[in-house]
Amino acid sequence: QQQVKQSPQSLIVQKGGIPIINCAYENTAFDYFPWYQQFPGKGPALLIAIRPDVSEKKEGRFTISFNKSAKQFSLHIMDSQPGDSATYFCAASGVSGTYKYIFGTGTRLKVLA
Amino acid sequence: DAMVIQNPRYQVTQFGKPVTLSCSQTLNHNVMYWYQQKSSQAPKLLFHYYDKDFNNEADTPDNFQSRRPNTSFCFLDIRSPGLGDAAMYLCATRISSGYNEQFFGPGTRLTVL
Image (cartoon, rainbow over all chains, first blue to last red):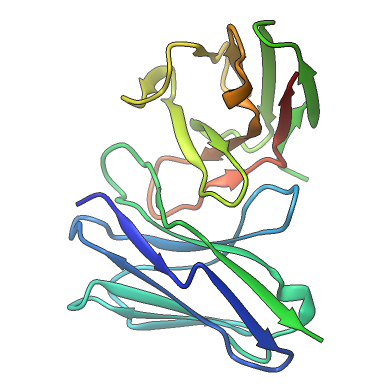
């Protein structure tokens, strides 16, 4: 119930491609879904986040698609660049309660030049 | 700039020798978290503070302790580090109201010899 399943584990795309990372959750009490980007040796940084009252959110080249009925959400990176090569984590959280994130297992993305 | 600061960035200790990692924040956030992250894995929550209230994860070993003397500072004490405790330790903060992100520090890389 508390798990967030993330796939794929790793992804390689050519520059300009559109990598898609998928996450699925079970707990319907989750109502905040952030995506974090982490470079080697650095702390995770928030990329984009969505709430379940919208089906899509765009910020620059990054888009979250959200399917509430399926309990799934995904990250799309448009026109991917080598600088986007990093590990991406999805997470889920509830506003009320303990404020904890449940993280997905991470996706290591490599964008080839 | 408001931020989360972790010191030291790199810490080397001997097997069994106590070590303290520190985190400070200028964000005035009332929730602070300590995570352990091993290579290629998601951050694993050890404990968090909601104001002064301490919340320990059920699977956090007794070897790990924490102190939060005031809003700005939080410490992670590892009483008798083992080889398995070598990891990146991440501090994060959050304001408890509404849909707000967790801000992560840069992490402390702990090596146990």
